[in-house]
Length: 316
Image (cartoon, one colour):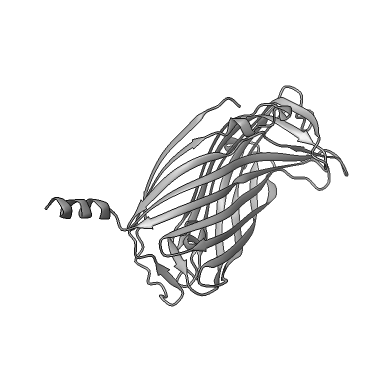
């Protein structure tokens, strides 16, 4: 993948009139925050071509850096990422990637959007030695996923993954939701599925799970959530219902660990989504896509424009 600059402007305003239990969740008094982060987005594929034969195709994707800010109830994220090209292992080949992921955590609902286009993968053994390069392999995945948080008065996804509010007591919640995905896999020769060098898949379905946040003490917290689901689909959207309908399992785990003070926070999070683009127990011909990101972030909170007010007083 050549060095690239990734620029995304995403504007979102959240309105929610639901009352929340103030003994469990507390917003920070500061109405403005700036955050920086180091993130790694990924899209990998695992293929089972026999009862014991597995292939795992991974991208050679370096980390990115980003910047964002929020004000009051309006979240305005302006992210800028620059690939750390020097951290790419040359032995693992080159990966060209466009990876846009939006993971939004509201009070009652969460949603995730995946727009991923990758070309160039590699495979390695258990010891980390590179076995082969697949520069011709192209994988595209487009998806949208949403969840409803049942115990939204006491449990906060925002406290775990955005860190713009505080979870005072440990709490959890059942989740229900679903998603829709379209994937396209193509190659000249490195990928073969049912005697073809390509695979198209469209699927949608429902899922359910549980999330929990441990308020370890006044500053440390840890959170984990997992949802499992069942999707139905076919090769293409316009052939759905005209061809044999397939059933696919899905898995969507999230993990976060963080440290909060009144003025700043630091956190580490991992989000992963597993979607089977081909699944057959009888033929042992399974193709699964793993997507998501790792993120290390730092957030600084303060009262907005305080420095301008102080400067004005000095002038007066």
